[in-house]
Image (cartoon, rainbow, N blue to C red; front, side, top):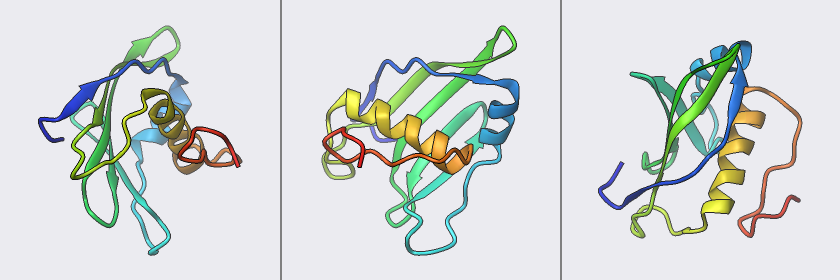
Length: 116
């Protein structure tokens, strides 16, 4: 994560089973797979598959019967990531977790923040 990173508010809770699934991550297999997601040293890391740039990092802690995000970072280097809207980034992170890591059917968000 570059020095131009920003801590942003992300309220996200997962069940213990969902958390276990997120720890498996996602390794891109085709050109269409735009994300490489992995869990390391307590952090869930989201990298763009083509550039390798780290865009998001999330740290979870146990909470009740599950886990919740206690720290969320987003890349704000304009050379690596051109977007600056925290609300849009919240939607993207949630969609990546729901669709890619948990396998829920959903429409990915558009850059403007609306669903397709």
